[in-house]
Image (cartoon, rainbow, N blue to C red):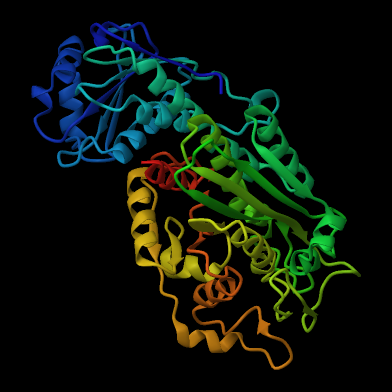
Length: 492
């Protein structure tokens, strides 16, 4: 990310930048110094247009105006942050992302960002700017390439401090880590196969000095991961099992994160209908989250042992593909009857969770684009999560609030466990249609042993239909920041 952010002092209204953005609290616009100064320079046009647009500084409101040559900046952008909780990290991060996205849309190469209140966490602002400036242009050529790119950002603060640079640097690194997740999810499936995920992991390990273990198809079979192996049988692209580890000298806790890495899901022999199948390239979003998280952990270097585990495969229909009615063993030892080959993610996760539970973590978390049922229940902007312990549920909820990401706790309804009983094996891997996200979570629970565990069904928010807040259209990187906040809380 070729983005340079630095603090600046002086009058932001005189800044020689392409766009000047201002954080605005709700009510009394004319009493806010930077707004009043800009309005005066623009001959009263700013407040007049704010009134016409009914802009009052409410959260998520914005007002964008040309300066018509009255300022050095070409455009002015007011960003509302509300009155109550105006300086919460999530709200500031979203406003900063909106400013960066507006700058990109205006073909601005430089941005001035006025922070009219002292004590704002510049790491949060840098995270937002890095996330808002994101674009996926790898496969664009000629006229489709952006005409300009945001490169320089000046943060106008009341008082510059020595710690500012470090805060900005770490914020940008965290944004880059989340954008690594976005890039992976946005990649086409002909480019991003299981081995490509493994290459990303190897690159992270080499760059940051993390431990890494990668199993190929033979290694997966030899390890006894029969469910993972079965899912991958029908593809010419071989599966991979990936284990990244960050181990500080005296860690306070051990957290393990597992990601579903289906680089493409055709449904297998139970093939999906054509409409929407193209989005199944994002069925590896859980794996992308884990890889982005490990990059963020390497940048932050918390005093917590963190393991990132990915079960990667491609689910394709082929003469060797697994079938409904097949029975396979698992790393855990339980046998599983296959009912629907399009419910493959839980099979790969089952072996990965068993492996992860044997690391004896203080908390085991998995992330997976597991069920459409969760999207039916919660929509496309909120993830469902399941926790076996209330304490850990509260930890995730607190982290999600700080990250500005939506998670909603779902119930593990014990009665539904009966639906997973098979007449010919220990378990069936799917149950009735109703409550599909719940029965999927109950299936996964069979493979975590006694480990404290949270399952996150992230199918909805990993792809955005339109840009909003820190999320762009396309791959969002949802859940990386929430998981990172959980790690930071554990480090405290």
